[in-house]
Image 1 (cartoon, rainbow, N blue to C red):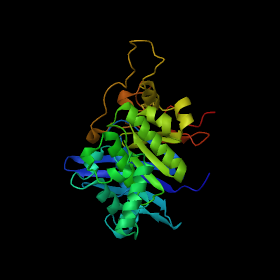
Image 2 (image 1 turned 135 degrees about the vertical axis):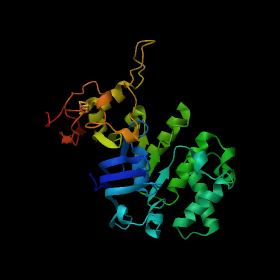
Image 3 (image 1 turned 90 degrees about the vertical axis):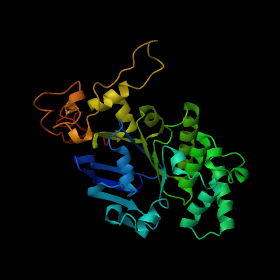
Length: 334
Ligand code: SF4
């Protein structure tokens, strides 16, 4: 396998509120490779979006990165720790959007309603390249065609509110690719879309990845999307990684009870008619009231009283880069 393009080591991002400290991300570590998709999955509030925002250095106050490294191999080949760069400095501005593209969940809130799609694309292109306005417009039309927008030379002059949800999300992908990044972070890119459009956008991202050897971080709460798209998976719960590994290992031999519960809650066409969908018992604790020991213990069907509610489980590694943090596994099993 090629060298990783991004290595996250022990990343911790906390929010310092008046009521207390929220450990939104607590020691995340993973590698991202060219041409592969890393899926980060978990329920709301598990820290997956804050992980993405930390990588891009756009965590809003009162949040801040309190530990760890984010090592990016830049276009030049130089490796830089993004945590050491000023978040609003020129290097980080070049990397954000230039070397790491971003697609958000809701294009309406990310696209300006006051400027045409073309104006926004041309601005993004010229921010990271010395092209003239005319050349940038030609490039913008090419990008719109690349992401499958019909009649791109016409649509370039449309406003975002004149486009359907699916076309808006395609424009977001075009914007993310404007500076030819090597890394694409897609944060719940299809959550607001209907099922058919969702499949089209996922297929678009997969095609662009194949054509450009893009490294993709895909953030989602949907295990079905992970099964479809990811090569590697990180499962997060209350800011901590609870299990990670290749997608086959996670789906065919999940070890952590939280991962097992997430998988049981995927709807199946093979289920009995009217069969009740399995759900995870209880609800996610308030971030300021993180349970002691294993944070999943109040909801875990396998919790061991006296152990799970007292001691934080450490990560145990198995064959094939499969790692889990659970007291059921104190040493690797065959
Ligand atoms: Fe369940 Fe205990 Fe494992 Fe946590 S450590 S997932 S409570 S068995």
